[in-house]
Length: 253
Image (cartoon, rainbow, N blue to C red):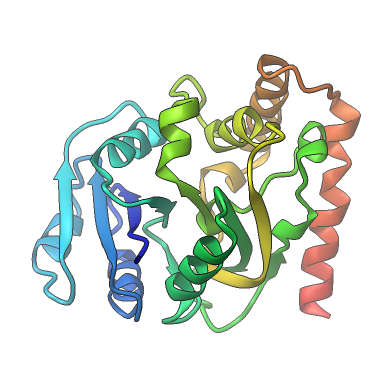
């Protein structure tokens, strides 16, 4: 029996990049999927691009929201797939068989969640890898150190949202970390890392937009750990940054 995948793309004024995301989903050879686009009321031509798209069916809603996690929750409510994934409006799948490989592994191993790696590229430099995020470093006992799977390469059974709830909208940057902290510490959760790049991601998102965003991100991650009874401290949180720096160095070497 086929496993349906719901791909949710949240966007706002993404006219420069949304076509790459649309093409990425359209090129997937795995066809038991739906593509849901939750737009925050774009005014730059994004909506015109989406409405003119004919390569694969897209379900679009465009309205104001209360932030990215509110928009993601709208996508979850609209999703009819067995599995939900979030592909940002400036990201795209690594190749045409990503969803096929994900579905095959999740079905064969009856997984609740599967996560892979992400390649980062700088704006206008899609052919150059600036960094590879290795989601294999994540384990449930490293939540207190701030580790989590790369969110665009995380595939989650929709039943988990029904069991544990959706994203908390009182987080601005770390709502995805809070969800992982809330869910992945449960011992009965069946999940694993797929050691390959699933998504290529453009650098410059809200969580990497400067030191203020970095400070807020870590504050929210500390708060998420406290809310979910996960021991942590500032030293633990900050110690992951040398590993991130090493990812840049190793990629550029």
